[in-house]
Image (tube, rainbow over all chains, first blue to last red):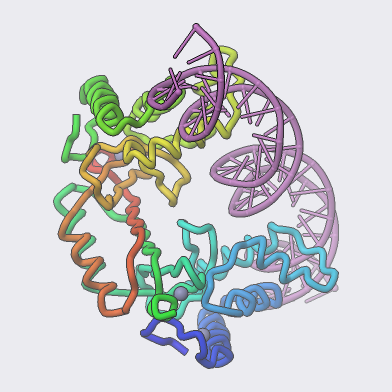
Amino acid sequence: MVSRAFPTPGHDHGACAAQALAAAEKLCQARGARLTAVRRKVLSLVWQSHAPVGAYDLLARLNKGGGKIAPIAVYRALDFLMAQGLVHRLASINAYMGCAHIGHDHAAQFLICKDCGCAAELESPALRKALVKAVAGRGFTIDREIVEISGLCPHCKAS
Amino acid sequence: MVSRAFPTPGHDHGACAAQALAAAEKLCQARGARLTAVRRKVLSLVWQSHAPVGAYDLLARLNKGGGKIAPIAVYRALDFLMAQGLVHRLASINAYMGCAHIGHDHAAQFLICKDCGCAAELESPALRKALVKAVAGRGFTIDREIVEISGLCPHCKAS
DNA sequence: TCGTATATGTAACGTTATAACATTTTGAAC
DNA sequence: GTTCAAAATGTTATAACGTTACATATACGA
Ligand SMILES: [Zn+2]
Ligand SMILES: [Zn+2]
Ligand SMILES: [Zn+2]
Ligand SMILES: [Zn+2]
């Protein structure tokens, strides 16, 4: 499920994953984009938790059980998924996470917990606005924005 | 010099570098931090331009002329320089740039031009404030913030 | 079914960063 | 000045992340 709160340790994550996969399926169908077996598998692996996962971790999970998929296959799948807005890349930790706001076409901001490894999208219009405004005076034309905030999530802070 | 505008192609960059190196020297002295030969050299290489530079680029420049310095030496120097706030790392491009606001102890934001490769620090209190505010409601404790905006600088836009 | 565009397979390679351990340098205490 | 420990550097190898190049297979409309 798309939750506005930071992912709770005990939540029904099966629902998150199922919802995300279903939405992806639907979106790709609508666009005529081909969500192939490999891509679908990678997407489901990305959604195994709310902790962003590295490409080689995904690769290992894919190959668990004797597969021989090469790194490039994972990167190609991730490229497709990112192009469709189904997955985000977190530059600060070289990892990938499922998008919780499929279809919104957003420039997202991320919260990353250093303790549990989970991440969440902030998607704050106010922050985005402040950013655009801050840049405006400098004569700079924005193409891409990366906002990644690391720290302690509420659940880890409590424990 | 510390310029508030995006670095101009024709500016007196020798002055930028000289000022930055002098400030670094002074700061380290005051702190009792050891700005050794390697570290000073790396810092000066970082300041060769306003375009963030990769660690292996720095390594190549260091070894130009037959040196045999290993990668780890560059990373150690960069670690020191970052710890002292003299250099920033840009996660989105795996590159390093000199800090233009030595001593301010700031959480900086960066503008990166895709065309000329130059970068500048934004250091907008308003943006920082908006970010903190946006996160506030989520119960998240901020440790580190990464804001990297890529696009076209005013000079490249003009040409 | 033909032909082309898209997707995947295969192998090698490039780039970025760190681990582990030996040696040297530094600066202060004696 | 000698001694000693901390800090810095040297050395070697390896981990982690990502891409190039080219061959093959699959999908899908004409
Ligand atoms: Zn969940
Ligand atoms: Zn946490
Ligand atoms: Zn300059
Ligand atoms: Zn430019």
